Length: 275
Length: 314
Image (cartoon, rainbow over all chains, first blue to last red; front, top):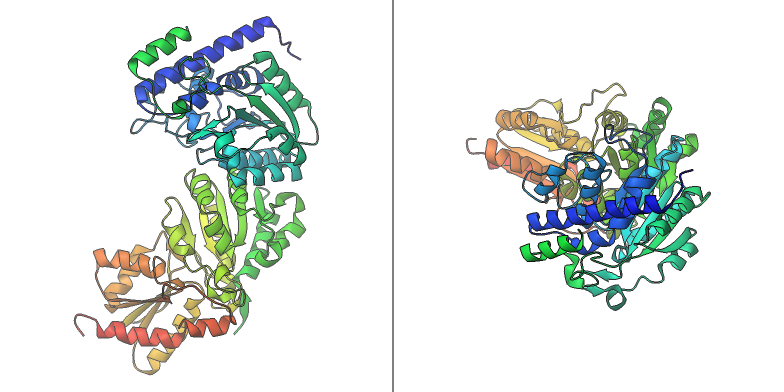
């Protein structure tokens, strides 16, 4: 087993910073998109793509690979940044985000970009894809693991709970759901709009193993992923407390930064802070 | 005449498909005894997943299984597969061009006693409007068996529309079914009757009645609504100069709509559309409901005469 030490942590923190910088640059170029939730998920994404998951960017269709589904598909920029940094395609492509004809669609499209495992963005649906992938892996006795990243606001969709039940019913212990629990949605705070708290106890009641973590603390994320990997007989949920807009001072915990692009000056400031 | 419900033929065909191909996976939403996927479930319990009363998740799970190389047959009643789970079928199955076959039973008013809430009269229109989605409506047992085989072998999303009630068997087991290729069941020069599903048998009856009155009606089984067999439809339009469409579906957006869209631009001829006239269904015996909504050979005969009366050059 690989050891989680300071060097690993420092390396992943560096990767997360790269992802955040790319997100800011992509959104600035595109002139639209979703920075808040992209930045809140950056540390989780770094841990998945640069530590936890097994995959081969030269063979995106490799059957034994682990699979990642971005159910909160609107934060596609952070996924694209992770895929480019992993070597699925050239980083130059990132500049084409949201442009006509670009494989980097506003929401992920599995038919257009290598490394994208599911076409997502309509909230709640990616979770079902991940359940289906986990069922297929079990059927084929493959040792692939399936990871799905959900937003907390997304959990207001009823279909999320349908998927939660199905994963429990079919004992999908090869499935790990990670909730990016930043507490905000487009119109405001979840607590004021439609609370989904407490998330972990609800999932536990639905038969899942759960763990609550700080979603920006790299060693904590890695330990939770390891626990999920070793969990048998039940699906595993990691509820990661995060800060929307994390890493960019003027975006942090600001609802307004759910879905708008930074200006040129704001990009400069953000990149200075993320240097 | 032998009578078989298309859902029964589906259940049997699916089971045989499962015997031949290991990549067939079947999902159902707590209706497996009615949709007949229970036949497959009994034979291949490992490859059958009951997803409970949760059709939306069933469709997204189907997409995930397909993304892992499975050929997925997902079944429910038409009202739920198409209505309840519309956006999952659209965004998770059709948008991603996933290899999922949405096979819905209990379409149309022949659901019968359960009533209008459970009688899907708009599903063809909805499915037909989705890019990448192909729509097949078989007429009887043998053509259902062939259709199930055909959609297994053709990658990509399909909507297969099946019924609850027994329908007359028109074809032999060896019938030649090709996706997107309509079947000419009768030649005629005076009027063309284009039908799908349970209305194909009625169309044949109507053609016999018309023949007795000296009118030669061509009959086309348009089992694939999308992609529509443009050449076959236009050929009948050219040969006869007027058309009647017949379907157990709303007159809006189904077979009649598809045919009218085509001929209006390519070879304009009068098109009389027989279907459910933009109303919901209701409780009743299937046979009573078919009579109530005029889904009968008599009505086809009447519309055939109307269509002929509208021809530009009689």
